[in-house]
Length: 100
Image (cartoon, rainbow, N blue to C red; front, side, top):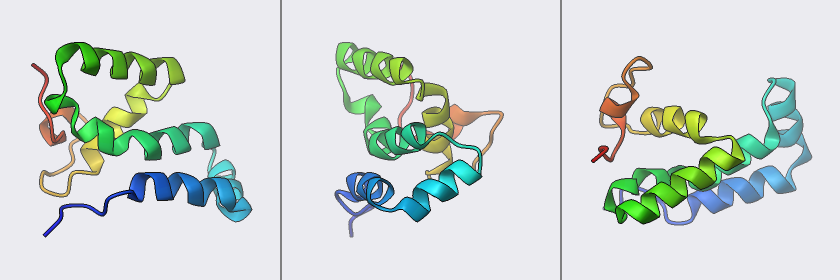
């Protein structure tokens, strides 16, 4: 069976963009709507960083750094792995990819 539903990352972004109540909830909880959308959009790509060529992986990481979401995406990526126990002090343990 599939480990995820294809397209759910983009569906989450659309849901945020099209629903004022969700935008309000994000803002009411002190978050940035753009950051939340960018993390939703990139979290599946984060999980496959280990499958990318090093140059492509580095470009993608730089793009996320430029957007200001890299640090948060690392935390979300670790928390999103339901196989490994989430450990805020050891995020890489829970990533679905390992640094080379």
